[in-house]
Image (cartoon, rainbow, N blue to C red):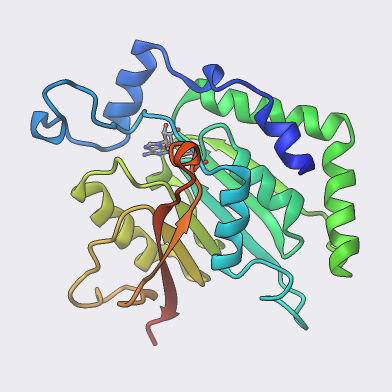
Length: 250
Ligand SMILES: C[S@@+](CC[C@H](N)C(=O)[O-])C[C@H]1O[C@@H](n2cnc3c(N)ncnc32)[C@H](O)[C@@H]1O
């Protein structure tokens, strides 16, 4: 519960955007401007809309992705977890703190202010020594020692990030357009050479045929799990998340 205290005493206000930044995120995310995507009351979610995986939801997610101690028994995994659209960075940091199977935890976020909130929180955890202490205690309980685990928080567009080393990816794709989802699938199948499992809030438009240059193929039979999110917590529900296994094409 330590991680909850560290993260969730913070208010959500810091993660809300100014109108100027909302416009930037909506345009840069790749979502084509299309009135039909939104309700007439303007309340439908858009790419800048904020919601996140709770700390309990993160643990449910890590289990399904196969990052936990049970899933990695008798192995010495050196996984790389990527959160594409990492917001305030909590998921990236929790993966680092609680999952010794994750050697590198990476986030990419389009919004400058959310990226800043993420780097500031990570800076405080490192400087206070909390990050090292929590990671060390997780490693001890797993009986695992990792050399120089890394957290990377990038500011930028997820479509420009190098994902070639990612073994596990989460994408909070709820507000993505069909076009963005198609580009995501293409990027993953062309570039995600080490990918094992991908989790997405939306079902992905898988390509009918494998493209000639594809190095990875996302499984045609995703499984679904209900994971706690900030917007489902009040009702005690979870949000459906789709999990895809990735396999080499040759
Ligand atoms: C719903 S939040 C999810 C935060 C975090 N991944 C979690 O689930 O706890 C989605 C984030 O994706 C960001 N985003 C949207 N389009 C993006 C893009 N093309 N590249 C990077 N980030 C993007 C938004 O700014 C927002 O902060």
